[in-house]
Image (tube, rainbow, N blue to C red; front, side, top):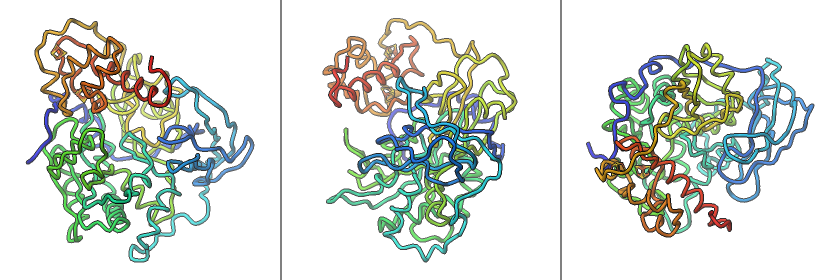
Length: 444
Ligand code: SF4
Ligand code: SF4
């Protein structure tokens, strides 16, 4: 089996923290109300097209695409009454516009949903517009608009679509369950993308710690021309786009370039399933499977409507097992810290991981002992101990010379560092500064 460079095995003895939820079937939870952020996907914020007091149905657009090619519509995830359209605090520093809906519990969908269309009736040119109209973005965490990812620039070409079923992050089992329970949606999403881009090779890549998912996807894709299922050795962060492309194809995406530079496109399994739902059923993206894990009484894989308040989802899992110290949105390695449990999950929230007060304590940084473990762990071939020096100094030029922009913020270096150096946090901070500077800010 081929693999990418570096990488680690976080929480190996605890099976990556996946054991409590890996065998729990997906169950649906629909809350009394939702708070749907309109600026949670990459690209310009969507523009609200409903107002307080409006009645909405599930799947109805509540916000139109923002300006430019990255714009995406947002749809109501429950039926009921709009109780407010207001700016609210979310995970970042800046409040985002949110649409609040109170559930009428009729689950009334807009017309035209659930009419399953024949696969053969779908024309290639109709697929990408349908993906855009359904508001689909990457569900592996990046939330980049999928229709843009699938719009191959002029002069470029794509010869392979890779469906990312690695789910290498700690604690998460949502994708594993999706592959085990609804494999045909994932396979159909891949077939549709292959048809849209006239690509004859599709690979579904799954790590070898998910044998049931492998079996399920193999059965669903048997005898379908051009589709392979590839078993990969379990390693973190194999699910990084560049790492996965290297493992699957042996092609190295150059620094600063996108996967299409090596003729590849990578999509998460949940995104692939959403594509099938959108194109074959006309169903907008209004829900996702999220793993609720860590310090909760009954961990679960919940099918949540977009905008579910994370405290409601935790309540559905019996509440906190101990006093919570930190809540991460995403997995244990790359999750973003939620300011409190009253913020909503979104379409890119693959997990809600709760840490107790003891687990949440951050240890004091110690001086670097030049052991080189961070270098060995880095999948991007960086020298984190040197890069950290530039980041601590606020030296934007030095940090760029050490390729900070190639850092995928995977956390492997911090995980391995015996001196508890805050490596990843420094790199994320520096990348944010550089992004700000690129937009015209001073990066200070
Ligand atoms: S966080 Fe960045 S520097 Fe650290 S291991 Fe991951 S890619 Fe390398
Ligand atoms: S792992 Fe930590 S202590 Fe070792 S070289 Fe890297 S930063 Fe220094």
